[in-house]
Length: 394
Image (cartoon, rainbow, N blue to C red; front, side):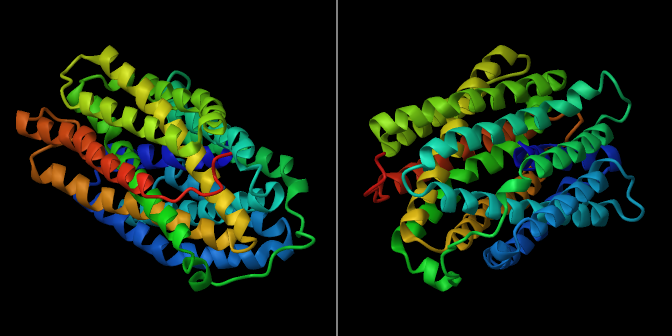
């Protein structure tokens, strides 16, 4: 839950928060996000190697990362920038990204070591449900906190720090050095696995639609639907649908095979996003239905693909930390390009957040939010169809 709360919701809240609160332009923000994600391109493999070597040190690297994560969140939402807003945004977000990456790599690799190849679907049912519940809480919290505080994002950041403390205490018995840990391996050795490279390509293509839609979600609801007050409710519907569906997808995958179930979910996502292109101002209930469908399909993406990848890593017997470091790397790559390409393009087509927009700008916003994810999802389906799945039916 803590990792979920620190992940996708921050991509949704932080850019718009700094646009609204400090007047940062979309182009400047897009460039900053691209530079930050470019930093991740370099550091994720390094963090993966660090995670692999830190297995022998048990829980102390985990506690240090949790502390860094909490401090970064406080800097983003609870403290006014002491200097340039965009530089402060970049520094704090770098802290959050770095700590999140290290913790995610250690957490997922721990699951590979503890549950083996056959237990990954069962583990994913609980792990991803918890992650999605964390996303739900973080997505809706700032909106709900408006009823209790004039500074809802500051309260959210403090609450997140409390969640970090609870998670650190509850997991304290699970980070001891692994008695018979596999030997450390390098990135080149892991990437020599052809099927693993195919998994990484699929992860990149399949996370791209989520990167685009999450970047544009609040802008779409505010400007295209003219329903800014509904943003929190629509977000919680989206992520609750993902959380509720997670266990259903794992059950179906165990019964019918993960590849077939993923293809079904990805096709349903295309239908939902394509319909969103045609929505007009005030069509909130139609968009709620789209949020329900697309949220459920996100549950399949977030549950089945990591489980399949973890199962493959378990069969390799080594390289779990490096593997998930590369997994994070390709996922973040899509977020970088979403930020650097989509936001400036919208501004170039005339879209202005928070203002009255001409039809050209609104059409560009609808195309970016709805049609571009459809195209990217089709490419992901092609990659999935071509993915060899030996040994992954159960």
